[in-house]
Length: 393
Image (cartoon, rainbow, N blue to C red; front, side, top):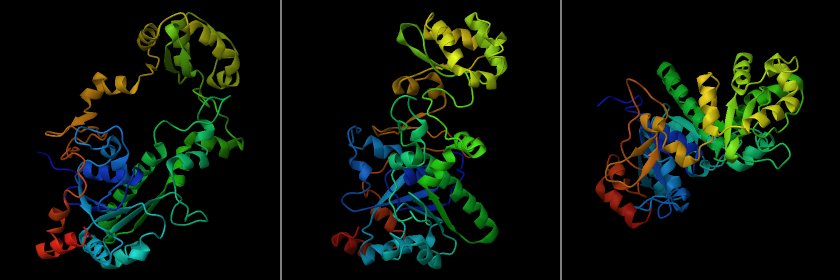
């Protein structure tokens, strides 16, 4: 078996729900030893976010971001629970948490306290608004951040209500940013020998996600409009209805591709001075798009896709989730993963490494299934039994 990229790295995961656990799952997939710390009796609240669940009662939501981890239940509000976490933190490389700012300080589990015990510790915090600023104390939720960041203002039909993205995209993007920050801190530690505090917020991540749309505002001072399935800077680049009430996406990114679109559709729009370049097509989109829409209704989705693919024009069907997950390409890339002896199936990791590949070692753990096993590396059996009797673990 090939080694993994993060073999030997120990991660103490005090996070829950989606954003930060998505980060620790990536670290676990890459080979880090991740211990997920949960509340006794209840655990991560996503364990109860059902239906649906698998045959072993693992919630589909929890399974999304908790494979390859061990589950340790500890009551961190109890002094003995805090003692346990401090002991584990002494030997950890990384600690990940998503408590409200200052929430762990009252337990002596904040960055300053734990870095004093372990100067090599990389302490990664993911919050709604970050560790600083006037809103630092506010809780953060993906839906609210999609609204506050302006993301919803550019999502949805131009003449309708603002829409959120169909999945918690800010949470997931923030988890990726936290992963990048942690790996940068690991690299920096190789040079300095010291850990550091990694501070990532949902709002910062969402503002960065505005990308070219946010940059457009910085360039011209104009508030970007909501254009539904159209593109702010490219035309034609949107969803079109075709025959039989089907739909497809046409992604025409340059003038050469637009000329190919015209040939496929039997039109000469590319010769029209109003549409001869992309800036002109953006300027005159209200004239061009109705012309394209009328022609699209003449053929079915599959007929158009075949013609455009032959012409080298990017296009695609709008698949349902079941169609997408059953694509031959998805199967070839290992994007649906099963575990031997478990009914749980999970979405695969998109990172493909040739020498240190992602490995799927274990399905999402049951609550507290590894508590004794983990603690036996740090404490004697008598002490563990006392904690169990006192419901501290």
